[in-house]
Image (cartoon, rainbow, N blue to C red):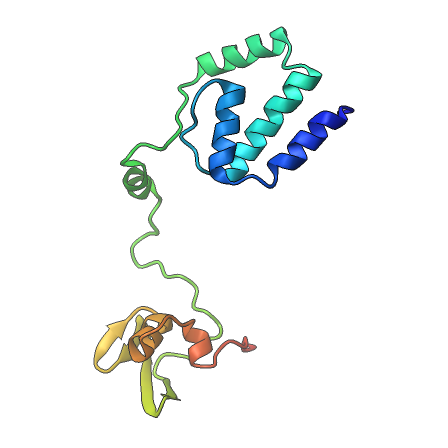
Length: 166
């Protein structure tokens, strides 16, 4: 693009806030936008300014885009039940199949302990997870959160972050 006036206008756009970008969008497109995403608005406005200065899509390109759009059902958002259907269709591992155990974890039967703010946190490692204060947990992170009241990486909390060989 060789038009310095368009470059200057695009440069000015970079410093506009959302409300000013929405006004500029309405000026250029002749319709209000529902978006308040400044990055999206900036890009759309910059594209329109360039298209006006350099020329828009050719009629042939517009026809082809229209043909492609007519061949598919265009969705802007996934259906409401999309995530539930995806979970239902996902392939479940066969019964009895296990994930590979993290090599940083000690073997079942081991005891992990850590003193946190004067309180001893003692965890028994089991084949199917961990036991802390008589309750079963699937992750060390859940135990660390229970013990401290804040989110932790369980491996970091129990200082198990270095991989063990073998």
